[in-house]
Image (cartoon, rainbow over all chains, first blue to last red; front, side, top):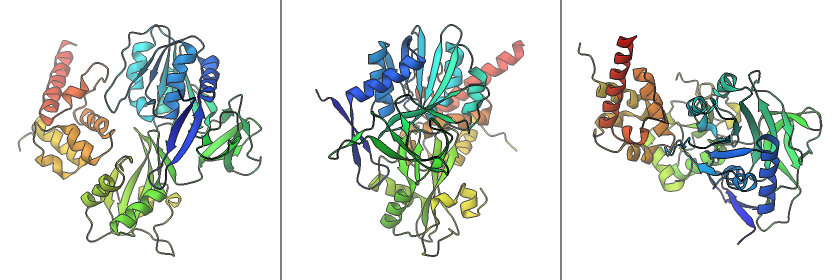
Length: 330
Length: 94
């Protein structure tokens, strides 16, 4: 049996990259998390699939190191948890899980200790209100910042007073390499860095996250350096996706614009300007070209798409909302 | 002016979310297939949310069999009718 697990970070297009994480690294990470927050775990309910590094590590390896059984569930597939377990319940949440959490917690909190771990994307907009409603001695919320390449790097313990800009603390075996001072990409060293297939082992990794270091162990997360978003935990590189679709459809005025979403936390809309293309044809390009890519929340034909001096759609990062991007009323 | 039926209100709500083709969707056709061809897997959850908001009802994912009741427009209509009836009964008993 292989002692490594292969993960793919394909983004939306372009050549997929393959990352190897050793079983020892994954067990180490699961032990680190469970010993810190749920040493007495009696059950794990994972909404993160085992094909994703988060579900693999804290679901499968979590079950192995804690001795607690794991149930893999999915809101989108409507595979919902049985609530007949006992003991300390650990819920591995992704963005969409927050839609279900109030009902789930209302049933669990009466007689069980609950730990909600969230990872794989930023929190959805309503998450802090749910934390405020349920956080207390029996229900704790911890948000983990990580990636396939690094595993979990940092955490925030959320409570009734938490705000969206609450600082992050590095996990014990992670060191911050980002220099103090100006905002810069998050760079970390850790014994749990994945090895890119065919490459030498790395001890450090520079991430897509933009941070403001506060001290050697704390930082504030400011956003992403690139056009990457994580739609309910699935990576999509919006600039590459837009470029690929634009080229396939022969439509230079096409852009994928990030938007916040209550269910997916991060999502995007596709805007295009064309007198001949229809919305249906644009959606059809996904089926032909990128079947596994998360679909846009909406495909909108707009009368005018602002272009840069070189004739390309304005960089995705210039738009904080579709409204600002298009000047269109929604 | 006639009050729209539950089915008409569902179709109208879902047209806003999914586009004009909902108007012509067979009431017994699989909604999951319709969504799957066009949207991401979470759109099924969006459909439930839209129906909740339209009729001011609450769907409990853990006790309502959403996989069954949200499979077709016909089943959604029956589910909503039952929820509204339950609400009326509860209100009358208060």
